[in-house]
Image 1 (tube, rainbow, N blue to C red):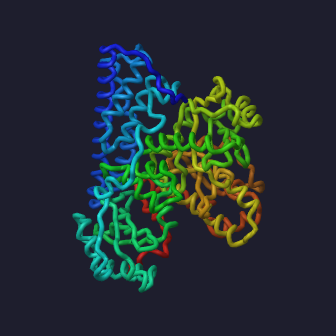
Image 2: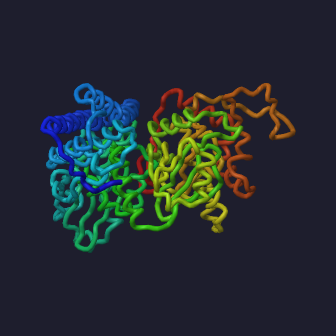
Image 3: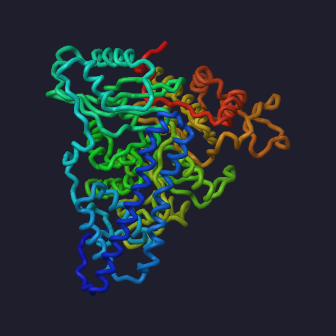
Length: 581
C-alpha cells in the first residue's frame, strides 16, 4: 500500500476528464443508494402485511443490487472515458475531486467504498494504492454531528406507562395492536424487574433510533435508557400475531441479548436511514464489543463493512507482531484455513484438489457460499466475506503455513515482492471448533448444553430449508456465549435436493447395498455414527435430539419447506418473551 501522494503534472483536458469520471461514479453510487433505500423503505409494509416470502426475496435482491449497480457504472464509464488508457496523474486527480464532491455527502463513507469498487473492477483488484482509491478514509467521521437526525428522545419525568405510550405514538404502524394494554403492562413489569425504584427515578432520558430494524417476522425499536452513571439497552421487539395484529414480544435491556440480535450468523436488517454512519456510531455505543465493520454489515452495508474490515486489518497488523499460522483443529478436505492468533477472524481458501470422498468442484463450493449469503442464516450459519487478491506481509506468514498453502492451494497463492497474494479468499468470524471444545470441556453441564445447541443448530438450519450436508462436529463452532454455529458449506443444498430414506435392514449398520443407493439419497439413521464420535456425547445427542436420526423427521421438514413455510426464529431467549394466552 502506498500513502505517499504522487505529484504528477496533468493537462487541463485530463483534469476535466478526471472530474467527469469522479462525477459519474458518484452519480452511480447515488443511484445505487436510492435503490437500496427503496428495498429498506418497503420493509414496514411487508411487515405489516405479513409478506414474509416477499421479505425473503427483497433481502436477496438487495444483496445482489450492489454488483448490478457496479456493473452498470463501469459500463457507462467505459463508454465515455476508456479508463484503461489513463495516466497515474488522472487517477490521483479523480480521487481528489471525488473526495471534494463527498465532503458534505450524508453517505460519504459508503460512496468511498463504491469508488474503491469501481477502481478495483477496472484494475482487477491488482492495485491497492491510497493514491488511487480510499484505502484510508478521506476524512474522520465525528459521531454525534447528525445524532438528532437519527434519534428520538423521550421524556421520563412522568410514569413508565406514559413514556411507553409516547413511544407508540411516535412509532406508528398501519395495523392495530392485538392488545396494547396488555403489552404496556408487560413492558412496565419488565422494566421494573430490571431497574429498582432508585434507578428508575434516576433515568433522565430514553433514546431510540428513528429507523425501525426489520428482519424475518420481527421488527425492533433499538435504543437505550440513560442514567447519570450508565446506560442500558432498551429494545422493543415486535411481532405480528397469527391474526395479523401487532404485539410486543419482549422488552430487552441486557447487552448479551442485543449482541445476539446483531450477531454475525444473522441475516442483514432492513433499516431505512440516510445517515448510516451515525446509526452505526450509536449502535457501537450500545455494543462496544462489536466491531464497526460488523455493525455496518448487520444493517445491509456488507460491501462497506468489507472496506472497514480491511482498514481494521491493516491497523491490527501495524499494532501486532504475531504470525499467520494454520488454524487449530482438523484440516478440512475442501478448504485450507489459517488465522492470526491475535485477530478474531479466520481466513479460508479453496484447495486445488479435494479428497476422493468430495464429489464436488471449485465452482460448486463458491455457489454454496453464495447460497448461504443469500439465505436466512437464522443465527446458525456464519456470514462469510469474499475477497480477491488479498495481501499478507510475507514476513508475518509462518513457514509451515506458507508451505501448506503452496502445496494445497498453489493456484490461489503467489508471492509478489514482500507480500503473499491470495487470489480468492473467504473471511469468517473465529470460533472454537466444536470438536476441540468438547475435548477441552470438563463441566458436564456445559457439555450437555453445547450438545443441545448442536442439535438445535442442525434443526434450525433445516427449518430454514437448508440441508447442512457434512455434519461432522468439527464443522461447527462455539461462540463465546456458548452458541453453536455451522461454518462448513461445501455440501449444503436445499432440502428438496435430497432423498431422505430409512436404512435398509442389515446386521452391519455401515453396510448398504450400493446398487440401490441414488446420488441424492441420505440415510439419517447413520448420522449417529458420524455427527459426534465419543459414545457419551453421542448418547446425549440421541437423548436430546434423537429425531434428527430418523428419516421421518427430515421428510416432515422437507414437506414444510415444499410449502414455502417461513419460520420465525427468535434470537433472544424464550424466558424473556412475554407470556400470552
